[in-house]
Image 1 (tube, rainbow, N blue to C red):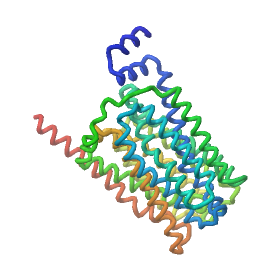
Image 2 (cartoon, rainbow, N blue to C red):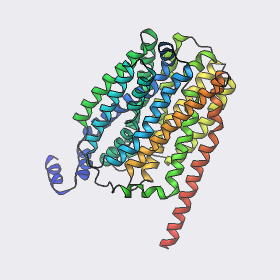
Image 3 (tube, rainbow, N blue to C red):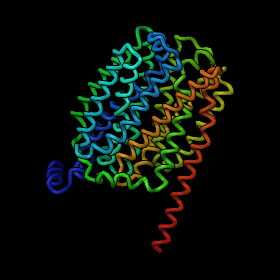
Image 4 (cartoon, rainbow, N blue to C red):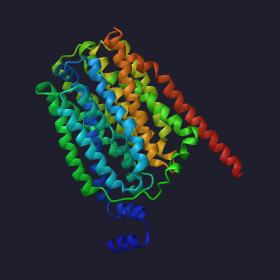
Length: 419
């Protein structure tokens, strides 16, 4: 087998060589997926960890809970700013070098946030730590598309995303406990240290791959001339906006609406994290039987129903936990299918497309957190943070249905042209 690998290394491109090596030694690809999963674990801790310590952050810095919720928005705006910049100007470097730079930025941003005492310092730390988020997902998805066997790319991407779901199962509850028992600053200092370990894993386990398919700067935008990618961006944005209108304030919702105690929040965050893990696993399993579009559309409908039931029955603890669990499961059941749909519809601009998906995702997070907080600012009770989520649900479903219609229409037109 080693002789075959040696010959291929001399007679194929670096991309094909990486794919071949993954066939010959599956453990190499598994290590790459594990390294990328560690990276998304750190991203999950940074993005979602703040939600479990929101009240501690507000108390320590002397700001209101809605104002503290704006730190969620600053992270999301960092993603929106950073994703296209990295996507457009990283083609000169290997995917591995780009990943190392991005994870280093995560470590720096989280460290700044952990040690800042001013509102502006906190906001800057969140912006910097969010800057590489979308590009890490985009670069990771492209790396896996180069080395994964045919038909296994969705499963590989789900494996990468699993890191973020595990972060919500284990990391975020740990951060919630640290914030409640000691200080929220311990939570983000721990995240910065973990990011340093991720840098080491990328150095050891991610192969050096140059994206030979990367188009020239202007050509990377060509895929945006078609309506399909925009419809997927819209579905991603609106879906995320409605989920985060509630999830950004999951702790005060559970305390003030459902009547749980402060001490029970660690277990509740673990339950929400378990939902994310199972949702991602279920999505990966179903990818072999159903198309990404069907998985995404069906999951979207389930989330809509869960949010409406959460508004109606949030005062009942069992119903609140059940609907919250289902919402979180749906949150990550959608991640891999939408990422694959974007890659499929971004030929020549794959990194820009994948990063654009994260832009839409986090712009939805920012606006969702803002709308959820706005309901409280306007004087409504905490149960009303679910209403903006429910009201936006229909447009996300329409975007996916329009994408399916547009795709079928284009396929029929191509078939007639070939006839």
